[in-house]
Length: 75
Image (tube, rainbow, N blue to C red; front, side):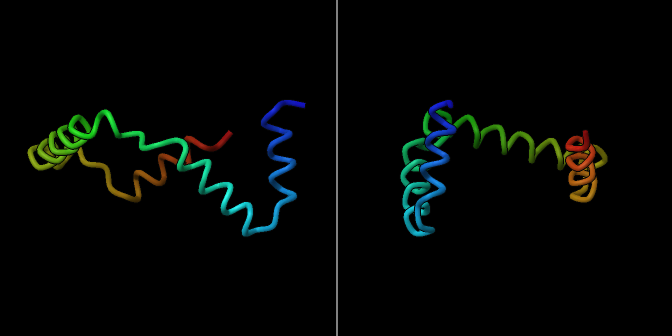
């Protein structure tokens, strides 16, 4: 059995409160995915916003986005 499978098995034996605490600690240990790239992410978001303003015909609607995701998830 892999370490991950063993950890999962043990974790599932915990109470809901203890599982919540464990999850909180595990997520906290990951850190932010944007720590080193905050400025790059902001610059990219601003660039994409400008592109959408300049070319609104290329913007995907929310419905198109979700439909595309659903289609992608189908086996």
